[in-house]
Image (cartoon, rainbow, N blue to C red; front, side, top):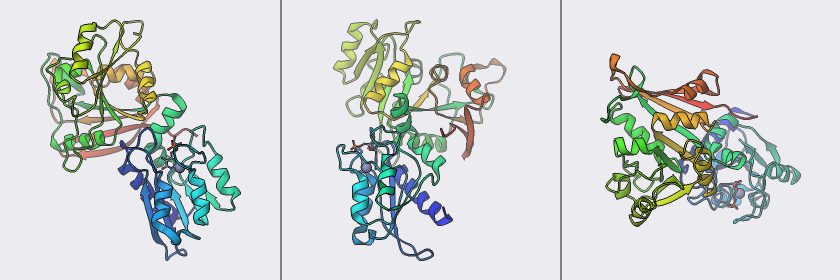
Length: 373
Ligand code: AOF
Ligand code: ZN
């Protein structure tokens, strides 16, 4: 694997990243077709999985390359599919186009593919290199991987904390921790998620809209999910008022009041009632598996610390971004942003620090689960 291979794979990854949040239930794959000898390579085709999940990336990049694909190298961020699904197998398109070499980043765990795509390419006499920038590709495909292998979406936590580690003051008032640059970054993260999730505590305390408000991204608001055991979401809340514009789903329990359910449904909110856990609250594992069944692969949990810690306790956290602002609460303290279970995931190395970002006066630390072998 050469430096040029890594360079073209980085481009394929960047292409795939652009459509994250728009292709579920399918992964957002990037593909690049490169013609010409080493040192004089030309990019003749490039594409990402189309919004909605089809067509796949490879046929789009190959169509763009046309005859130039003959004898060229195809870079693709996921093992090409080999199954007759809603579209013909990408392996067939690759062979038909006369591609001479395929470089892939990550093997597709989908049982319909799972090694068969690579095997078909090799048996067609096409040179094959796998595992190019595998770690980066896992990050982009983690939603697809966890949905296929664990039956749940990948969960990424976003938590804002004061310089001294608190998410909120003890009282009920809303505490502004982050500034506009961090808020813009959060909106961009939202745009690349399939769904955003909050607990009812955060929904009631902050009255958030959970939409994407960035120029050029206003059509990218994902599904909003509220975990609300007793259906306490207020009909006058921003979430409910916006439910006709942005899909809104409340996950509740069977013991929630029927009249509250009817009220929310009338206002355009979808309500799903699941069996409660032993404490009478929504069983988060059941909630996540219901979301995966609908096709959700990547979920961003924005609140609050209690929901985050319950997700951590259930072993369902794949990434966590902690954004620290300059304010301090001081000795009065409040609710800690990082609860004991999330703290344990970080301390044990299950979540490892993989990056830091300065966001104006705020700074973000990113923790991620390591790549399965
Ligand atoms: C690829 N390239 O761009 C994507 C792939 O239902 P279908 O026929 O669209 O197949 C969906 C499966 O295809 C999905 O579960 C995943 O395994 C793979 N996604 N494969 O070759 C792509 N998005
Ligand atoms: Zn395919």
